[in-house]
Length: 57
Image (cartoon, rainbow, N blue to C red; front, side, top):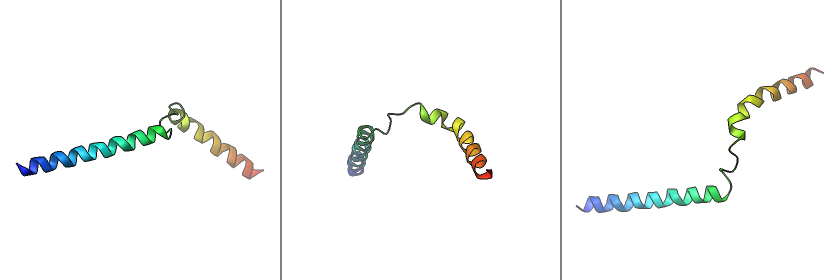
């Protein structure tokens, strides 16, 4: 029975730690930009082509 209490305390402590980490990341603006990550892959090739054109000149 003692192990159940210990596991309960550990799981609640971990849940609180993860919740605090989530709140800190939201406060710092980690989740503000929802558009750019979805289209970033579309623009990477154009940037690489532009760099290659500048090097060949």
